[in-house]
Length: 97
Image (cartoon, rainbow, N blue to C red; front, side):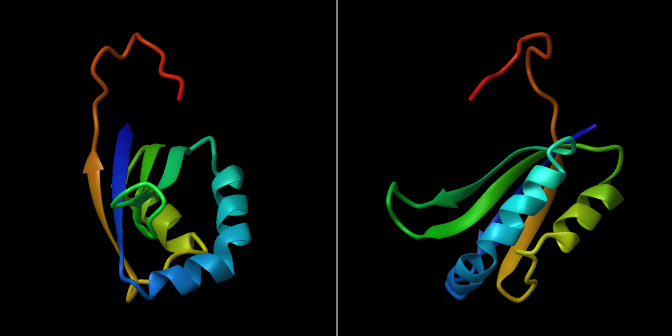
């Protein structure tokens, strides 16, 4: 099942990002079979990050939460998240970014 996660950061999350970025990126790479797409979001190009987005392919919401809460970026007082299921239109067409 496909899932998307929207992350919303507080301004204090920028310090966490700087401190934990190498571990976070290693975590994403380690779980790239489940976290298919991940990246930071900004209000405008070049501005500070204000959140992020993941696209996952995992069997359950519980697994999504487990992956989120095991991520080195997990900081519940600085980063909130919303989880949604997602169905891609034209599932037969491959997407390359």
